[in-house]
Length: 205
Ligand SMILES: N[C@@H](CCC(=O)N[C@@H](CS)C(=O)NCC(=O)O)C(=O)O
Image 1 (cartoon, helix red, strand yellow):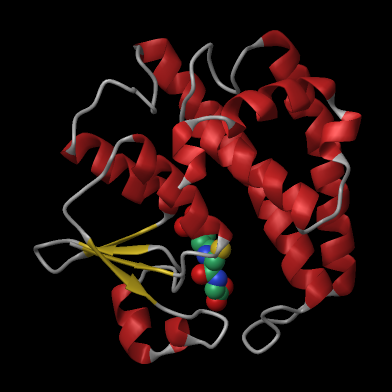
Image 2 (image 1 turned 180 degrees about the horizontal axis):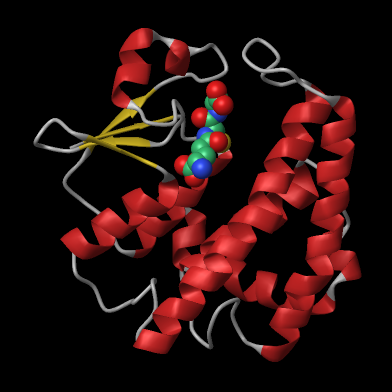
């Protein structure tokens, strides 16, 4: 298998947090440069359903896009006892629910805020300042909801660490570093959880 990535990008960091947790093996890494447009070529678009990184090439020559899909593939390929997608019928449903909420209300808005206000990818998309401002506002509306959830639960989806925590960790890092929101100063429950998840060995890779 081959993993096409740009390790420094947020989505690849998110996938790599998952892969390190389960000690994923059996693939080769291919570093590409999305800022320079390596993902915009016809050859890359023919492989990737969304034209982005990460992208996994399977041994049968087919391809998987989307961080969560690739995470799920490795998780089932290499059975482990971490149960990052949940350890019971109810837990799996809650992990799915929270992972989607964090992706849609958190990560997607954070990405749109950053892309539209900085014009980072203006070579390939229309960047609309007002969209970026509104997306940042929606991030600010989502943070108290995440804080409330973490006031009621040790981790984001359940009482155990799951993929929803990896997604939420990445979201909070983008909110702090890219959007300059004072998350840890403003939200005590996010701060408590963030300190716990940041100390996991997989975070140190
Ligand atoms: N929903 C996708 C998002 C992937 C994504 O947005 N990747 C970014 C890097 S963080 C990318 O490839 N950007 C290049 C571009 O948009 O052209 C996933 O989770 O894999």
